[in-house]
Image (cartoon, rainbow, N blue to C red; front, top):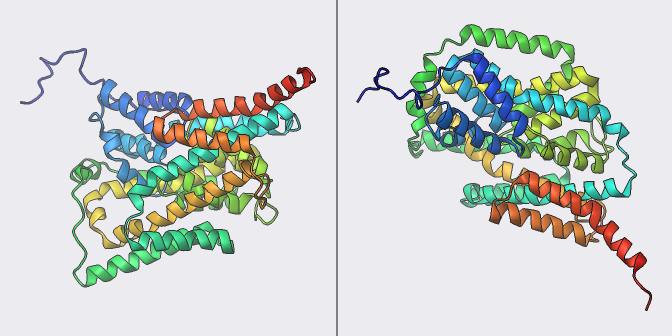
Length: 429
C-alpha cells in the first residue's frame, strides 16, 4: 500500500535530508567512533537507517561487499554511497570530508606534538609496548575473521604462500604482490569467459538499485572533482602521488596498507621517512585509539612528517580521491560492473593477496612487541600474554577495540612497575 504522507505518524516519518545535516551526522560519527571502518558503518547504519530513515535499515551492512570491491577505505566508501544516493556527487564529497575531518585534526595535533613526548620514560615505554601488543592481537583477530571468507580453493592457498614468501623471504614490494594477484585473476577469469565456463555472478540487491545512482547527474561534478584533485596535487605532487597510489591499492580496509606503509616509511632502506620500527608501532597504536578511519590517521601523520601541515592535507586528499572517483563511476553502472569478467577476476585474484598482506602485518607487529628485536626469537612474556588476550577477546568475545587497547596500555605501563615495587619492599628471607 502506498505511503500516504497525510496519515504517516510524524514521530516515525523520515526526516528530510539536507547536506548540512549529512555533514553534521557523519562528522559526529567520525569524531566519536573508534575502531575503524566497520565500527563507523555500524553506527552510520543505525543513524541513517533506523533513526533518520534516509536509507533502508541495514542497507549499509548489506552493501559491505560493494564497499570492499572498490579501492578505498571501507568507512570512506560507505560515506560516498550514502552521500551519492541522497545528493549526488556533492553529497558524496560532503560525507567523505566529514568522515576524514576529525581524524585529520586530531592526528595533525598528535604529529605536531609527537617530538615532545617523553619517550625515554619507562612508564610511557611500557604503555606503548602494551599498545603494540594489543595491536598484534587485533590484527591477528582481523586476519582470522577474514580467513574463512577468503581461503577457499587451491589458488587461494598457493597465492597466500607465494605472497608471504615473496614479502618475508625476498623483501618484495607489497604493492607488487597485490598487482600480481590482480593480473592473474583477470587472466584466469577472462580465459574461462572465452571458453564459456565463467558462471553468472550471484544476484545482489545492490545491483537492482543501480538505477537510483544512474539518475544522478555527475559528469560536471566529476570534472570539478578532478580539477580540485589536480589543484591539491600541485601543492605537493610527490606526496599526492604516493598516497593516491595507496588509495588505489586499498581493498577491504586500511589494515592491508600496513605492509605498504612499512615498505615506504619504516627502516633505513625506506624511500621516504626511514622511521624506526618502534615509532611506527607507536603511531599505529595511537591511530587505533583515536577516532576516524585508521588509514586516514596514518596518512595525516606521514604527510606531516614529509611536508608539514600542508603535506598532511595533501596526503589525506590523495588517499581518499581514488575511491571518490571510482566508486561514483561504479555505482552508476553497478549491475553491468558486477558482470564484467575483468572486474570479477581482479577481485577474485586480489583477495588472497590481501590476506598475505595481513599475515605479514601480524608478523611485523609481533616483532615489534612479542619478540625482543626484529630478528631475535626471545619472547617478552607480558607482551605475548597481552597479544593473545587481546586477540581472543576481540575474536571470541567481541570486545571493544578501544577497551582492549586502553587495558593493555595500562597493564604494560603499570604492572612491571608494580612488580618491581613489591619486590623492592618485600621482606628478605
